[in-house]
Amino acid sequence: MSTPRIPGRPATDFSKAGVATPFRPKADDREATLLRLEALAHLIDSAFLIPGLNRRVGLDAIVGLVPIVGDVAGMVIASYVVNEARRLGAPRWLVARMMANVVFDGALGIVPLAGDLFDAAFKANRRNVALLRRHLEKTGGLRPNEIEGTAVRIDG
Image 1: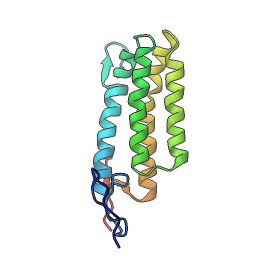
Image 2: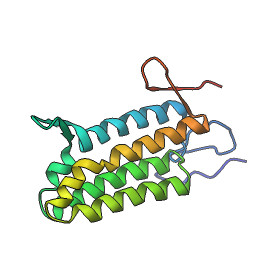
Image 3: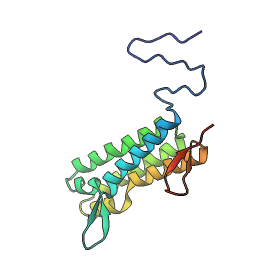
Image 4: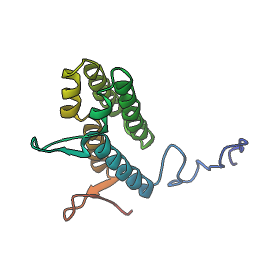
């Protein structure tokens, strides 16, 4: 017996193994999502090189210069990364650790000047994406590619 279709939602059959649902994407979708999150984390945390200092900063540190509003915007974007990790099937403990990184970054980012320096150094989004990648590699959804350092799907 199939699940009744709710108007406005795609029909999904939960009885078949390997069927992608909105909350359990296929392995190819996981890879694409992870690559998209890595690109976003790079833009937010380390897209620009400061000449003379050879330090990388991202939009989070730049937007964080605007008091309160910039830090809230950074936390909203970082929360998107955590939500995507939850959607990819990250366990609760990993999502909690990622949220702790976001809250820690946001709470210290509110402090004028020192918070902006902390934002430039802590890079919560890159940490969170690295945690997610490590988890996906350990659970068998992805494995490290020795040649390029990127993830590839394990067929099976």
